[in-house]
Amino acid sequence: MLRSPKPTPYRRRPAVHGALRPRRSIRHQNPPDGPGACRRRRWPVSRQMQLKLASRQRKAPGMTLPASRGTYALVLRKDAAAAMQVGRLGYFAFPKGYYIYAGSALGSGGLAARLHHHLAFGGKPRWHIDYLRRHALVVEIWVAEAQTRMECRFADALADLSGSTLVAPGFGASDCNCRAHLYYFKRRPRLATFNRRLHQAAAGIAACRIPTDPVANPQSPIK
Image (cartoon, rainbow, N blue to C red; front, side, top):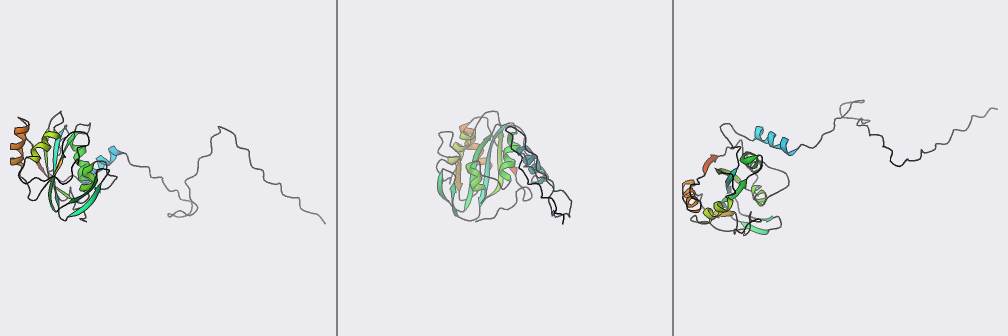
């Protein structure tokens, strides 16, 4: 009786230091599109592409954002009182009402890139205003085109407005000596009154209004 030859034992190939490993195939055994189909890899979207998509999806007709550098003030409305953590700054209570935040946009993208960031949702918070932005709605934007940083003068003008209240000391003022760059108002302030205060702080400077639209700024879930 003939016996079948014994199978040759499998010997693992010794690893060679510095050799390149074979690239894994992206073909799956049971892909959703059927057997033998390949699934494309989804690479992370760059920040420039996110801003480009945001300008297409969140920019309403008739809403023009300046591409130049300058200083801005976000007028936000909060429909419910809540307490929240603002990064490493601390835990603060934010009552129902209006908030105005002063900031500067001196980067390559200018005011358009910075304002698109504030109008969009999602992502990891980068600035203090991102924590409040999750629970408040931007109803108006005041901008002043300039090549120098004037957010501290904006903050001084906001502090001088009637009815202004400091609810979070140090908010948005991590790199300056201001008390804060965010102030609370029970009633919505007017741009004309703000420009008079701003003219006293910085002669010859006046902000203009950019109204927001529900399409460009969808209602955020109030918590």
